[in-house]
Length: 267
Length: 289
Image (cartoon, rainbow over all chains, first blue to last red; front, side, top):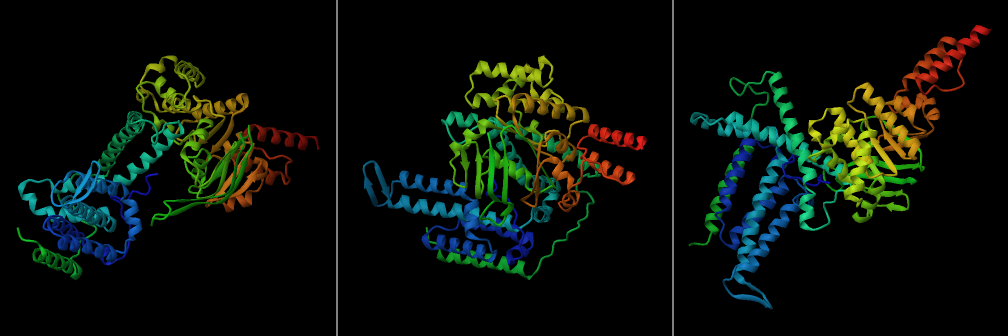
């Protein structure tokens, strides 16, 4: 039932984006998130959207698949859009129908914020769809390595991240299993009042937490048994390799930023 | 409640890159009051198949008929809940579904969902605690304080509590000790015989299939490839081997003995008891000659 959720999943492939070094991808996504906030007019938001679509096509991800998997988040975006339509009261009046008054500024703000949100979600989803969790953590660890000097437990953080990424699908499957077992016992999550629905979540959450804690304990024991004792002196099986494509990505990002500054409305 | 499957097909995650075909053109029919075993190698589609039997999955092709309700790809969720009232599933490791504060409450969860009055549900819970051989004082304990075997029994009670007329068992004894295994399997047989409960058992144990079932269905790579009485199915060792399945120990042993004696016995020994009898008779015959 949850099999359509793609947030945090990895789909193996061989596109340009797939073959990038995780460091360049991470760096790019991180900088991109900052750069998104440079946009402030129609031209810049259009550029961001176009750029994201370009990345999707280079990564060879089917649009239908992407949007189908992000449906829950799309609802959130539509909700924000409507909130802006209804509550922002600036600019010229566009629609005046009984209680509903929609203003030009509301529409504009709503669309801008939605695009910003959409672009952020899409870019991060592309990152996880095209990069295996192991590469992401490896990349993260190397990128954060300089911070070790400030006593930041980089290796431990990376490990925590890889464990949580690793267990997202497992927990999803688990949820699905428990959901089925409770449905078979007549539990109903899709009908009834809000209060009833919230109460129907308890039979799902309790077993899920119980099994998550058990899993965590098993994992801790398994790691200890295999002699794990943190990052000190640990070598790598997979070496990261920065290539020409990674440099291209960084240059591409700089071009994007220059374009954004150029198209940006002054204020 | 008769169950029939016609040309049932199912794909997981249809329309995504994760799409995976699990069932192809499955046909089967399960009569009221029968005991059917579904066997097959890991990944043969057994578990997917049983999710169809109480509407947890809707077939992407074909029709599943449960009693007088037909389930197809576009059956509404409301219809499905009606089926679940009559078809109970004991999943693999059913103790993972426990969540309530007390054993009593957990057993009552199903009946209350299906609209059985509270007093009746409570009474039923206490009956089941006794029936499953759990100590009486367990009712007010937390299910998480019990041993693994006891948790399993509580979970099984939680399904039996709403008195389904069809009981589906997905490897109900996995991970139990031999004695617990036997006790639980005997309990299901008792329920099947005394209350006429239509039983469907998914199992890896050829011995259980041979001993308890009156009909065996073999799944292989998402297709239903053999169906019939246990004597028929286990009589065809060659075909079973092609589906990567073995024989029940008693049948395998019988074949060895037959080789030794240089002749074939009339009946197929589906249980150890039957095997002992067959061999004793053969020895007697030998002695008389």
